[in-house]
Image 1 (cartoon, helix red, strand yellow):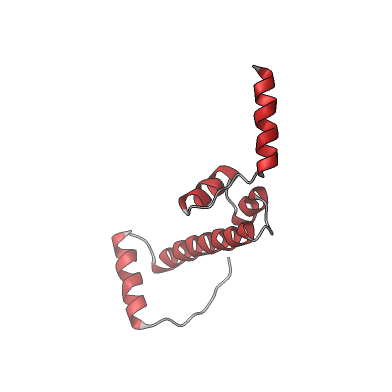
Image 2 (cartoon, one colour):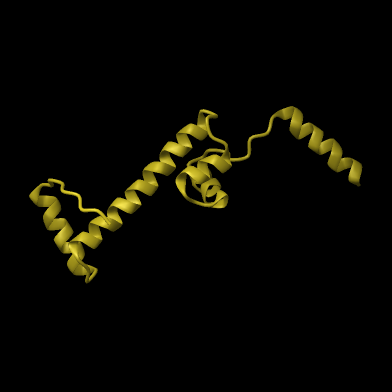
Length: 102
C-alpha cells in the first residue's frame, strides 16, 4: 500500500472524523472505503456511457467496472437503459424460430 498526501478543507476533515468515530474505525480506513466506492461508481458511469455509445458491449462494460454481467445489467436497467440490444429483424427471426418449435 502506498501513501498519498492530499489537502482537504476543515469541513471534510470534521466529517471524516465523525464517520471514523461512528464506524469505530480510523480516518484512513474511512477515506479508503470512500475512494474505493467512488472509483467503482465512476467506472460504472464511464462504462454505461461507453455502452450507450456502442463502444462497450455489456460484457466489456461489466469487466471494466469490475462487476458481474448481471450487476451491470441491473445498473443499466435502474437507469432506464435497455441492456438487451436486438434489432427488429433479429426479434422477428427469434419469434419465427420459437413458433416452429411449437
